[in-house]
Amino acid sequence: QVQLVESGGGLVQVGASLKLSCIASLPTSSNTMAWFRQVPGKEREFVASISWIRYVGIYDDSVKGRCTISRDNTKNAVYLQMNSLKPEDTAVYYCAARREGQGLSKIRADYDYWGQGTQVTVSS
Image (cartoon, rainbow, N blue to C red; front, side, top):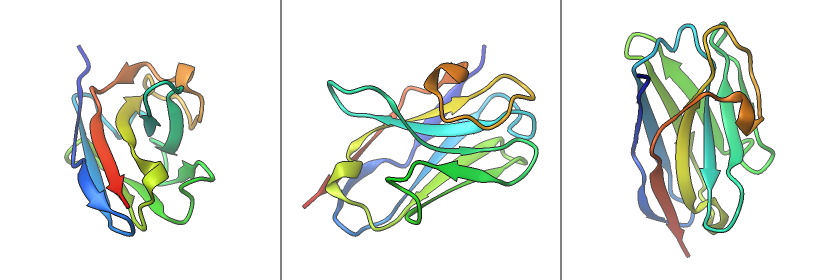
């Protein structure tokens, strides 16, 4: 059974930085990984994704320039560095993975495995 375990969330002030981590039980060298986020009453939305084949990331416009997705295949880990945090970044952040060999996607339904989430709260 695939497991994705997120960590690194917390309560921060506007303008602060956080780095989220996701440790996967599958090889990040073979699987496209992503971060999504969700607030109560709204759909889970795409944040960023990183390709398994190249160190290439794609981002939602709302975080572009402020967030960086990366991976460490030696640890089967994926990270989301978030800078200049805003109150609207407050959400539960989920790590997600596609099946082996699948490419980049912003579509929630394309992801097959999910973590339990980590809460990020940005206070003004």
